[in-house]
Length: 252
Image 1 (cartoon, rainbow, N blue to C red):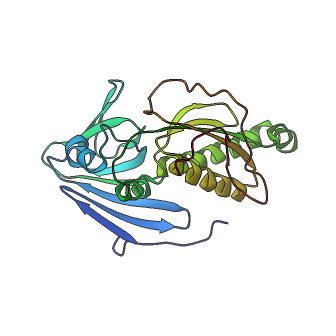
Image 2 (image 1 turned 30 degrees about the horizontal axis):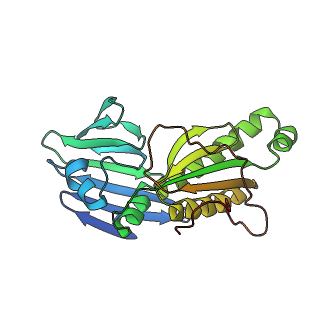
Image 3 (image 1 turned 180 degrees about the vertical axis):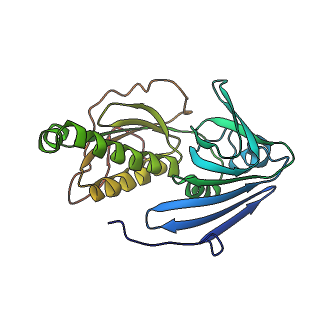
C-alpha cells in the first residue's frame, strides 16, 4: 500500500561511483529514484560494458535531464539526442555517451539503478536462453467487473510494475500479448527472481498472474522468436512460485 513519505538526495540510501559517473539513489518502498551524474568523456560502451562483459546496455532508462546532453544509439541503428528539460525513455539494447563540455545530470526512475546493482554482483559468464511467459488470471472477469475504461487503467498500472521488475533483473521484453508478456533472460536465476517480484507486485494491485519459465542451454539471441510454444505454467495464490518446465535444464 502506498504511503506518504519523502526523501532527499542530500542523504541518499545508496551511492555508486565508477569512472566518470556517479549514481545516488533513494528508495520509496518498492520504487527507486536515481540522481545520476555523467562527466564529459563518459560513454557506456567504454566505461560500463567492460565491467559487465556485454556489448550494449541491457537496462531501460526513464528519466528527466537537468543539465547537459547525451547521444543514444540503439542496437537497431535508431539514434536520439537528449538535452536539458527533456523527459526520456531509452529501451534496453543501446550505447550512449555525453556530448558537450557540461556534465549530464539526470533524474531516473523505474529501477535502472537497482538493475545496475544486481548486474555488478554477477561475474560475466556464458549466455543462456531463458524464456518467460506471463498472463493475468481471470482477465475477462476483471473487465466485466471494472468496465473497459477502468480495466485499461488498471492494466496500464500493472504493465508498468511488471516492466520495472523486468528491468531490475535485466530481462528483455520480446512482446506484449495484451494481458501478458513474453520475456527473455540470460540466466534462469534472473528469470525466477523476476517472476517472484512480478507476482508480488501484481498482488499489490489485486491481480493474480501465471508465469511459465522455459530454459535451454545455448547463447541468448536478441530479436529472435523463442521456439517454445507451450502454455504458461502457474504462479498462483498461496505459493507464489514460478513453475519450471520439468524437461528443462536446471542451472539455478
